[in-house]
Image (cartoon, rainbow, N blue to C red; front, side):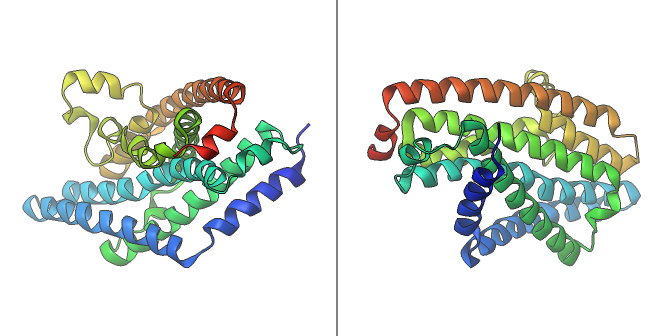
Length: 266
């Protein structure tokens, strides 16, 4: 049975570690930097090809840049929540308490959700300020896309934790690399259709690719996004289920080898 006091305790522990000015500056800086770079590229295309379609392309690109950070922030937060336990030498003590693995995962998932929502809010504000585009004008498809991308971030975060279960603190830099590894196949900055055929075939099985394609089609042509969104959601179900199986397996192996080694090795 799940104990909500346990979940709340872990949630507060990670919220306190995130609630600092430097973290807010970090998410604002990187989100704004990407918005300026890729938004400016989109604006250059708009100026070269004046018309409603070009403006839609700019808005779709701005929306995709902001939404990508929902996946990124969710996955990175889960990975760094695990790394925090390692660097604080708290992982062994954590599993010596009545806290269950499910409660721990729920608490970290909630932490990543709060971080992703904060990052999205920052990106939404900067997109409105810099490019005069309100992402909320997209409507209900935006909410469904955010939910889908959050789930993708959870799955990605579980895979990151599974990876860290084997190499511990040495995998700190790889946390970022793993989060960015699916970007080429996800169609964040360009349609999947521009990829080589072999990479397009891979992208069809990436849930984020369908989520971004749904937003791109809806913003640029007002075409119904629901086919891509439904596809994204059921692919996410498979993705998260696979991530949970891998995480359970890696945690079991790591416990047999000794969790303390992860806190000591560097």
